[in-house]
Length: 277
Image (cartoon, rainbow, N blue to C red):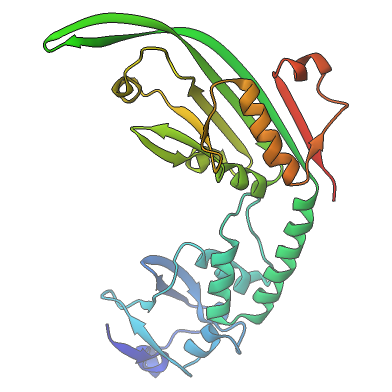
């Protein structure tokens, strides 16, 4: 991939005005902006690259190429345009964005990110955790091998559990995800991959079924739930509540005595915890 100086890339008669569009290829993602935007912070690496102080690369289409993360560059480019840091509420790549800002050396952006991280840290201190539990019994049918070439059809009752978990603390749900694991296909997998969004997690699992061969769990996509490092299988809501309470209380949560109703809490239907720091 050839190097060029921006002044060589656009010879003087063809060099775009500061407001003319220019296309960048950042890690394979194309962005269109202007030289005025790219040089809005002259002391940054981008300011140096697009004022002719540093060489730039071109891709096969002649676009200026930067071998960095293309996805988060949109936030850097928007900051160059507005001098304001705009991030979605569920933004989960703060560490990556901070590293990219360090690379481009946009000092006001680096400072804005530091302020944002302090703000997020304060918001995480006070948090709410709400868990709604549901349980049902259903019949599972399966085959049992009694002898070579001899199989019989059997059935058994199976307890099916569902937990809807909501927390205002994204970090707590990540902590919970590091402790709870699904057992499927003979392997343990973190529940973190089942996060619907940073604040909401839905779990579905079954208790051990008497007489059900191990391969039937896989065949019928029946997941069991384990807690680590205790290596304990969760076969009842009582055990689930106990383990979640241990994790939540160790993270500073306490039971909200005003909600829910005591009957619902004792029946393991609704659990609400709060944290004040």
